[in-house]
Length: 568
Ligand SMILES: *[C@@H]1O[C@H](CO)[C@@H](O)[C@H](O)[C@H]1NC(C)=O
Ligand SMILES: *[C@@H]1O[C@H](CO)[C@@H](O)[C@H](O)[C@H]1NC(C)=O
Ligand SMILES: *[C@@H]1O[C@H](CO)[C@@H](O)[C@H](O)[C@H]1NC(C)=O
Ligand SMILES: *[C@@H]1O[C@H](CO)[C@@H](O)[C@H](O)[C@H]1NC(C)=O
Ligand SMILES: *[C@@H]1O[C@H](CO)[C@@H](O)[C@H](O)[C@H]1NC(C)=O
Ligand SMILES: *[C@@H]1O[C@H](CO)[C@@H](O)[C@H](O)[C@H]1NC(C)=O
Image (cartoon, rainbow, N blue to C red):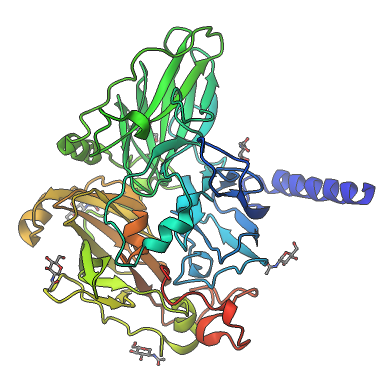
């Protein structure tokens, strides 16, 4: 229609004009997402429902700049409730938009709901995914870029182009069927995924694969790859045949630039690497192989894509480039320790990253969090400090805001260090002291590498260690000079990882394992950071479109209440 076209032109013109006038000022980005089960997209030769956004898998890129406002109007055309969370976007003063079960009522099937959030004081590479009902296992994820404002220099020359590369393990079959065994006595603790997809495409060269990911590049040029692990249960090592990668950014921090033959990416993590196309005109393998899993006998669990030089006539051939020994965790730990913050680089704010250093901070709190298996009433589950999180009908944030938690959760009932108590369910909410520094010690007594994520804050990764964490000895090994700041950190089996976080962001914040099954079956808690100052500038008031459910749902419509626990 002519009038619509004219209207859109005017809006575009208005936005352009605003940008020209304001220079580096933030803009509003409006997105409309139709979320469906798609049966036409087939990474592999299996019929399975895939969660697609606007017919795309992975979903569309959110391409924002520091301080932009992102409006995402989500139409839930699935047959069950849905929420999206924005992994690593800090939602400053605004946990209302965080999109996890403890902050938001789900978007019911057949309805739409608009998230509005700001990429306040952030830059970097992130991704979004559906946060409830094990849906991430079926897709629904997509990339987020937060670009530097023009006024702040990026600490490396502008690359020729940027590629978003979402890599994750993938299971054949129906996620609802997998979900139905979780939280029942029939659940097997470990099942191994079937393959690894790159941007929703199967591995190159495998008979079961219907397509593969390929990037076309020009010899001599340098490209930025934004790589995220969007998987459910597999950590991987990424490498490109005959090419080195230069690590430059992780989850919103510019790192000291280090040159690597390969890079470990754990579940929920994101990195930017630069790759210079300094080889002969040819095609090269891009590989993502699992850590702590052998693929010698069966290579289906190796993600493979192709880097295609534009004048290449040769197809990739021969064996895949060998990575490090997948069982050599010392190598992985050493790489993790070598990832440091670039203190002099500017990022979201005009002053350099190192202005906000942790060298002399005073800690207000220490939480020692042990992730483990737990069996409750014969049901295999996961727990933190022997408490397996139980998702209430009512989001904690709503309960906090309207009734100070009454009838929904008991603040600080959760033990802040592992006690030898029998495993039990709990609705775990702990106090994080506003504007205090918290030290989080993650311990892992599982056989797999776990990954932990905190919404709302950056984690300053000060240490990794083996065996038990002890205050004097372990703390003396911390790197307080240039620890990298990120949102998701790995914890090695029978080891610990220590991070600091500055709790300057009031809200109700999810602290979780990114390992989907661990999270789904109870390995999470919430940190309530409260500011007594009622000034709305200190924490945003409820959004106008706030959804109500649980004890605040007066419609008496049973269908609008979320399940009492995510696995039911
Ligand atoms: C993302 O936004 C930046 C800044 O506005 C722009 O330069 C770039 O072309 C955009 N990229 C894509 C893929 O849309
Ligand atoms: C649902 O979508 C309509 C049409 O785009 C929009 O006007 C409305 O605000 C949306 N509703 C919510 C709750 O976001
Ligand atoms: C840190 O960033 C600066 C730009 O501010 C850059 O010149 C320097 O090379 C970076 N240092 C490292 C070790 O990457
Ligand atoms: C930390 O404190 C010491 C001793 O007061 C001081 O010399 C040092 O400059 C401080 N470091 C930073 C990064 O502020
Ligand atoms: C809210 O609950 C906490 C304990 O959970 C209590 O300390 C506080 O006084 C309560 N605040 C109000 C306003 O009732
Ligand atoms: C509590 O959890 C720890 C692991 O975190 C475990 O070793 C211990 O056996 C558990 N205690 C009970 C009584 O289940």
